[in-house]
Length: 285
Picture 1 (cartoon, rainbow, N blue to C red):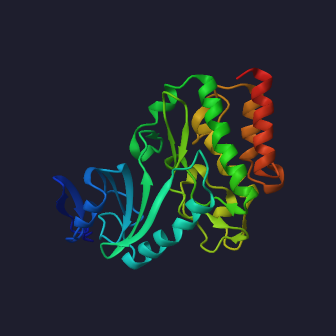
Picture 2 (cartoon, rainbow, N blue to C red; picture 1 turned 180 degrees about the vertical axis):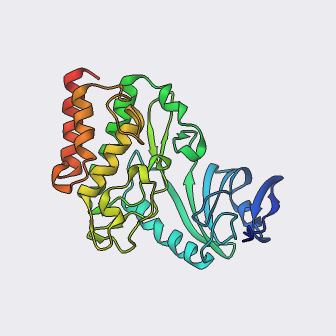
Picture 3 (tube, one colour; picture 1 turned 45 degrees about the vertical axis):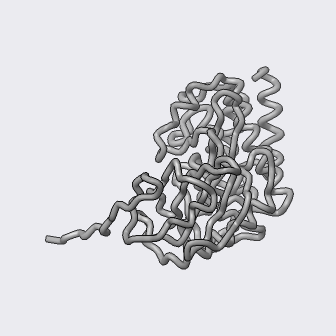
């Protein structure tokens, strides 16, 4: 019989809130921003995420350096990845992207500090996807537009989306505003698949994201953006017409985006965004 030994998890605390880690780690450095009011400690990225409130308002602190409960990698690797991610948020600053306040070496690791947002994350791991169903159809259509517009902006600056999925999307259900987050692995073009199966959720990954040596570019991003259209307008797992709540014209735009063959997709993110606008204008939604 094979015995599977699960990693030991201890429960520490910060400002009276429980934090699950594999070993003790001093989190007192969080006091520089105020008092912790929220803890997200189940990421498998090696990052510990905290909501902190102080004199400068509420911030979201993303910290690498602690032995988090679900991370199997080397802590130094997580620290290096997070340190490098600051460039993404600085280079791609945009109204739809969460705002980076500072990046700082602290607590034996590294932290990115963002403006706090009360927008709701959509990833299945948060079990909050019901927020999409609460949106009106025009709000869903516009949420897709906002995501596309940001990625037109990113592509124009020469950046390629990596590991984009529904967990990267937050939405304010009242205003309909989209806030994008967790874009740490975006890279400057050109990008080649150096991994085989790349990071990401299979619901949003193109065939080339499984193929070692394949180009990862705007056409790849067209696929994931088409899948995200299904997150708002249908079912991103099946991508079926039966689940789609929009028009036939809108469905055809998204369906072309997620075709397996690269040559059959929209040739650029800008082309996809323009097609989405045209299909939505034609139906008045």
